[in-house]
Structure formats: structure tokens, C-alpha cells
Image (cartoon, rainbow, N blue to C red):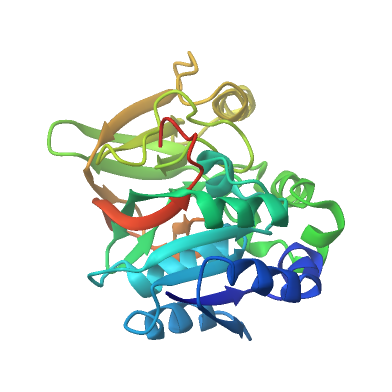
Length: 304
């Protein structure tokens, strides 16, 4: 069997580059041929994954949630995909937490060597893909506007520091969301479409998330169009409750939906976050692509 190891050299304070020889030797215990590619910039991981499709039986990659998204971009519109192995080395690693893949390099490699391969859902968003979250509104710009230097220095606290400085005014935006059975039209400060148990390091949807059920969960924190001070505070409380207590929080400001396809209309100046990366603006259509991604996960992972 042949595999390629792709890694982001700046993710996780450069620890992957320091352990490269060890990683390659461990991968050779499972794969006969192990080639290595160090990414050079945005989009390189996508291009490398796409080029690897017809050559390798497995794509092993290291990086954060953004790196995971880049790999998905290169694969999700193709057929007969190779298996994926993941060594998480980012700031938050939400997907790894959901799949119980540890950040420890040796333990992550052990899963790649001995784990099971499971087909996982992903999401098609207009003409691109996301693995675990599509969101707009409060705090969602922090993950792609925070510098790598800040993330390396203080970890995920850098996201919340950026969010506190830039997002506390809470832009209110009009949203219309339809899933074929229900239609919601309201003003909101946050809209999240989730295919994961963890978002921004919080156990956002630990009870309901299932990456093999063909559905995603939606949480919209609503707000009046022209809020006064007290209503702004109420919106902040709604967002805080959502992250602290999760998708099932009892809060009248939170609208919850689920389904396999959503048509969402917002103004063109609203920017969407795809798996922690800056995505598209304005109107989007989100559709679940069931059991598309072949992922190596722990053998004892009972619920995907």
C-alpha cells in the first residue's frame, strides 16, 4: 500500500516538522511506500490531496481544522477516495475531538496503524465543501482573522480575545432559512450549521451529532432589528448559553432545526465561516453529502 503524508509546517508551533522522521518510520509499519509533502501556502494541501487521488491508497495529513477543510476541498467531489489518516496539530482541533483522535503524535499514529475506516458525512456549500461547521455572525471571523503568531502564543484564547475586541457589537443580520419542511425568517446575531460534537473547542452538540446520519443541526440566535442595550445583552447571553451549554440549551433566543438540505438567504455582506476558514458571502445552499469521506478512527469509537 502507498500513502502520502501532507503536513502544514507552521501548524502547532512547528512540532510536526520536528517529528517528521519519526512519523515517516511509524507510517512505514503500515504502508510500503510513504511519500512526504510539506505545504507551502494556502491551497497547497488541496492541490496535493487532489493530485494524490489516483496514486495513493491513503492520504495522511497533519494540521488544524483548516487543513482538514483543505483536504476535503480536494477530494469531496471525486469518487473512489483513499482512506484518510489525521494527526491533529492545530489550535482547537474540533474534528479530532469529535472523532476522539488525540493531539499526541504517537497516539494519533497508533490509530492510523490499527484503527478502523469509517465513511463520514460532509457538507456541500454552493460549489465547495465543509466538514463540520458553516457559520456566520458573532465571533465567527476570529478563527480566520487571528494571526498564526497569536494562536501559537496563547492557543484558542487568541480566538476569544479577537472576538471580544471585534464582535461584541454583534452585527444584526436578516436571515431566511428553509429545509423543505420548515421556513424561518428572522434577524440574527449568529447562525451555525453543525456536523460535529465540538465547535471552537466547546462541546456544542455532544448529544445529537452523528457524522453518519445524513443530517446536520442548526442553531440560530435571533435578535431584533434595532436592539437597545438590554436586548444586546440578551443576545450576548444567548450566544454564551449556546457555547457553554450546547445545542440543547433552553434559551428562547435560540432557534433549532435539523435536516439534510438548507437554503439560506442573507445579505451579500454577510461572510460565512467554513470549518474555521473564511468562506463565501451572501446566499448559500448547504447539502449533506452522506458517508463520503473515508476516515481512519479509533476502534473503540462507538458513535461516529
